[in-house]
Amino acid sequence: MNSFFYMEEAPKIKIKPANKIRKEEPYVDETWERIAKRILYLCRLKKITLNTLALRSGLTPSTLKSILYGTSRNPGIATIRHICDGLGISLEEFFHSRLFMEW
Image 1 (cartoon, rainbow, N blue to C red):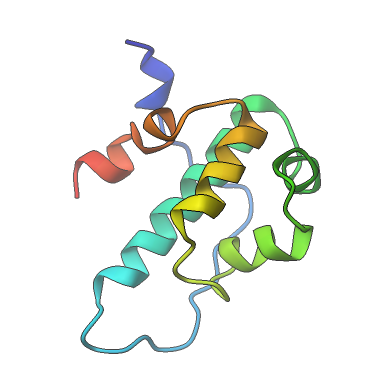
Image 2 (cartoon, rainbow, N blue to C red; image 1 turned 90 degrees about the vertical axis):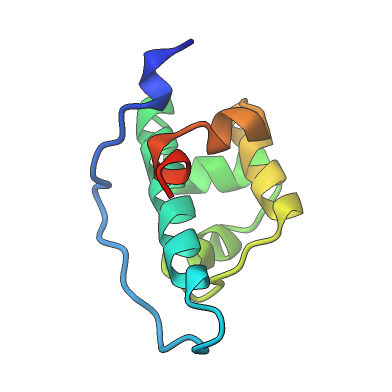
């Protein structure tokens, strides 16, 4: 098992909390933050910029940044799959992290 999937570092950019979420979905806030942190960590690990990731993923830079800054707080699995393709990893590798395992 590769140990680098367990090492999580603080992202270089600060993730801004978005507006209030509905009370019946408190898990959305944590999910979004964990996905954003994982994307930033993997970009740093692969030494690619967000624009490069967007290009490789087939997403627009604004779509990717809306996920990272909380405008889009519930990215679909298909969008995450595109991001994984851009990173050259599987969905399993994306979610194989303490961020998601210790939840």
